[in-house]
Length: 369
Image (cartoon, rainbow, N blue to C red):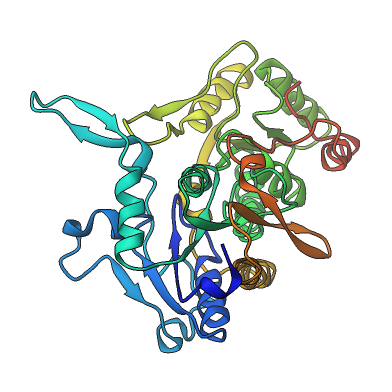
């Protein structure tokens, strides 16, 4: 892609929402307008451009300075988002009523050409960036921006949305200390994170949890029960357990709520399962709190606002420099670009020898192992 060829770019937000999305949209829009480019927002992932019949008022939104004014501090995304509708595996109904996955990626490419859009800034997690990589392989100029509260994208130190999620989870766990102590209960706090334990680990240690269960360390509830009893002997008549939604017991399986055609499986229920088992093992009253989507919403922290604005501006600079099929990544103190093929299909798990886990063990926190 030549530097001088760009006249109009698009931006979309896909997958789960995360604090900081609107800041990215604003940064991309202002940075592109300052270069004399037009900016188009695609509604609901890519649905707005290749499923126009769903949008009587149009699935594309011209982004102007007025449209993005005052949105940096807002949660959510003014473009909407979805974790359905992968154009490479689009759920399609056969004549007999059964469903199958159809490749409609060529429809997307044709739609970009029809609307004379020269490049796409794709904001999303692994699923969205995998789609973007596939479109780039078909010739679309794409720059990805790493978004996920789970912080599980490879090749970037951090993703935007993570800091806000951890900060809110920490506040919630802080509040549970007083009620747990008042009633001498065990409190189990389930947090998001999918197959990585970053949110549970960082919020749990920051909020002085007694037990942290993460996907990277299969847990043994007997060990957790021993920790609770040890605290009892030492005069601690309450216990705070933080569990990631993707945590699983040794030799056991994930807690899956549902799995639908065209979308990733939905995790959940591990908190309730652990709550029942802990109460049976210890005889102590045990309650469960599921933070769930509370971690996705609300005002982004200062860190997430700043990194979102930096990522958005860097994405436009990448397009100006003729880069494509890359993702913006934080490599402190700078932002760099990494090929999407090095990012997609991988997951950044918590290293078992990382300083945060080592610190947690030094502080006497049990990881259920």
